[in-house]
Length: 605
Image 1 (tube, rainbow, N blue to C red):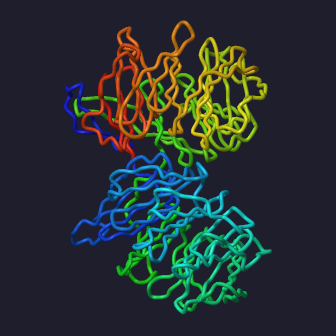
Image 2 (spheres, rainbow, N blue to C red; image 1 turned 90 degrees about the vertical axis):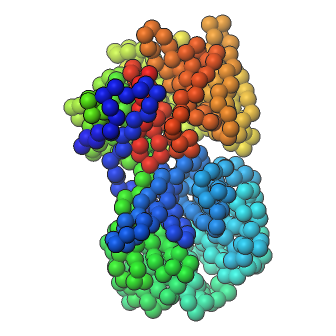
Image 3 (cartoon, rainbow, N blue to C red; image 1 turned 90 degrees about the horizontal axis):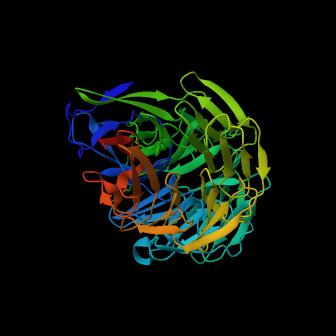
């Protein structure tokens, strides 16, 4: 598939030309209806669907990609209230006070957490209270509309929260992997009201009569009184065993919608009988207050229903895939994500303008936890099967490491085949492998990084540099090794609340906060402030042009270029929406910016 932009044959060097990435099916985990629009959350962050008046109805609407969220993409929970938007995911929580135009990271007492549920108080308009369930940190509570959060897990026997449900302004239920808990004081303290011996309690909802319904992971239905205190089994006419429940929602008409891995189920009698109304996996169902219209987030996009869930139709594909990282390979570009197969753009230019021929890698085992381009023909891919060397042109591949590589995986290398050195490390900083023969053999090393996260790993011909980050102390520490990672020396330390450390091999540079550290010939670091505004350095890339080394940095405030190794910087982002810039790359002839929603912006160097 190819796509051409409308630039002329002699475009200005300062003009950005756009290439739109082909629409890709993507799972939707969170939905937040609002008047005239719908917010959706998924792998690539957030997007907004707005209706366009016309004879075709709401399907004539368009999706608008949201800003890059760091954190919490992927977004698994969303809530909208006027101009306030709250978003949560694996990287914590963020909030917007401007209807999604600008975002800030929430301050969380526990540091970085994985958020599984979001439940605003029924009297939020007066008390500004919101509860958040987490994967491993219990329950968080905010009393200032989501700006700051503190842990309120007193009384919980389990810290894995699967769902939250307010019963009134003080009573709340929490579903966990081993039972159900109740709070009488707005979520400040908890008491177990049901111990489940049959698995996790996955979802909760309130029935029209006030009773509470819960579904266990094995499909068992439980019902309680309006207080959520006394629980008993509810026999359903249809066996729900093996459906793998993902969400449970009660419509304004009292209909139950159960989203499962096997499809969407509907009940009009309180859960005693169920009918499958759609065969797609459904992660979430929501309804706009007083709107009647229902929305469902599926494994491939968004469905809408105007008849209380009887029938469903698909909206256009939302721009929420997670191909948000760029890896250049010659004049080709790889768009890389974790849960979406990499997409290659082969760039050409003719009289009509820029053209990209798109090719998607097939047959890979996802998720991909790491990716590196090590030469003009080869990729290294990390994932559940281990470390794979892939030649995309031929489809040949070779399994180099058989250790499963889960979570964030860092890959770096130095030299060229057959004596190329390769290092592979787990993002938790606990595992490190080294090969001195281009992946033919490996030895596992024992890094001294402790419990801190490994934020960067960068090889040079002379030594290996690592950066660790402590999310609780907001502290970065640099480490050096001159013997291929066998022994490490602790080096420079710095405090920053920016959790990313960007790195570049030539010249050796590390971005900490909004300071770029450049290694000098004497072994000392030279500091170069880059960017302004919120956020820090996200990416550092370089290329050689006419015998000159060019540096490009994506930082708070946009994209910046230096022709004198960081002595001075010039802005390069004119005409680009700053909040949507996800990544940058440079080839020998182009500077490339990737925007959220899948838009490549190119301009000549």
